[in-house]
Length: 164
Image 1: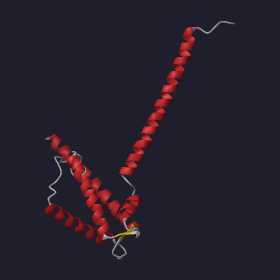
Image 2: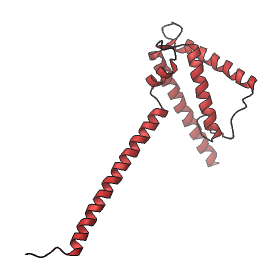
Image 3: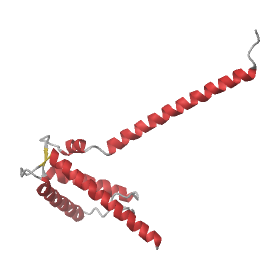
Image 4: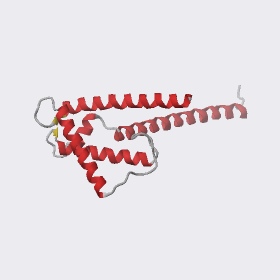
């Protein structure tokens, strides 16, 4: 036939190739964004084993009251920051950090130490005075169930108030 391809047919083919390339690039970017989001989420929400390893400062393979109190203190500070930013972790009140006067901090630390002591007594199934990895896993599961129940209660209360 010897005819040269028409300009419209080559433009159309180039357009299809460009569209395909853009779709592939968009899909790849989307995949990379999802992977980055998963990595951030996994870092922000470590598994129970990862959290255990972070809390077990002395590397003994068990959590004592002092290590649990330190972890509770860090968690409380994290919730305080979320509250200050208007987050929901501590109840969604917002409006600033709690009073950090020295007596207030001392009372908070005493309360967290008392809570850590109670947690050890509650979850130390084998009676060795510390919380091992398996006992910690049980604690994490119970706390997750409590958190889900509290969120459900809060959601129902919010819906009830909105209906008024």
